[in-house]
Length: 295
Image (cartoon, rainbow, N blue to C red; front, side, top):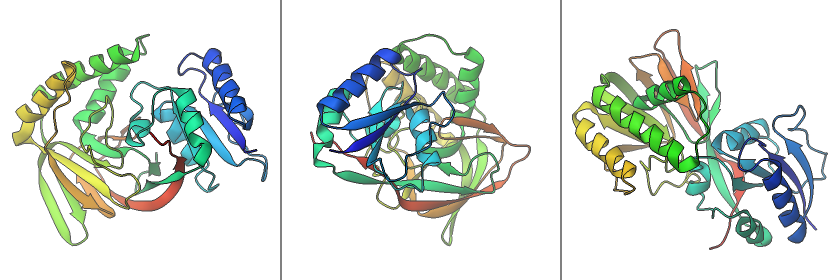
């Protein structure tokens, strides 16, 4: 019998109701488990040698919080997505139903997941999804000003996409310089994203074939000249259509990036710098392992 530590964000999904459902499903599948809420102190503590794996139930922010805190524990993580965007779960091709996910863990297969290590940035040291500049941090600021409205996930995603479309149409492109190995790329861009997952934010599926365990980042650059193309991509998503996104993509294991501005994001955290700086990023391969589900 496998033993799990179940870590849950009670503000995600249906609160205590979903917590009881997941515990029941884990017991039914033959696992024993202990429970911790991310809203209580000491949630990250593990019983030495007693847990075989960790179960995380929540959105992308909760997954990030748990992974970063337990990065060196090397325990497999079973993810049950309960957030709005669930970009990490979508990249891992997980079903939406918790029971299906838990039943799928029976083979105990795992999938490697790289993590980005950030230098020259005091606020954040790691990322799972991505780091970037331009229209996306501006969207995050706008959403913060909107406040936390009680909206169903689909409505919340649509609101974010509509705001993003307006931002794209008026955003002043900024100079960006990226060094990958001995090559340097520069220009005026609406967005520069160092991505580890297929999508970011409101399910912007910018790298549909990305593999977060392949030992490489995808660097997505959207130039000022691609403003209309980008805006049309967002319009398609608002209308419920997922059109292919054809933007410039570079591969990198490590890089240096300078953006002429002070606003950026690391995963779902918005950051405002005191001045523009060059940020160094290095990939840490196979930093964490997620349990996979066979379809």
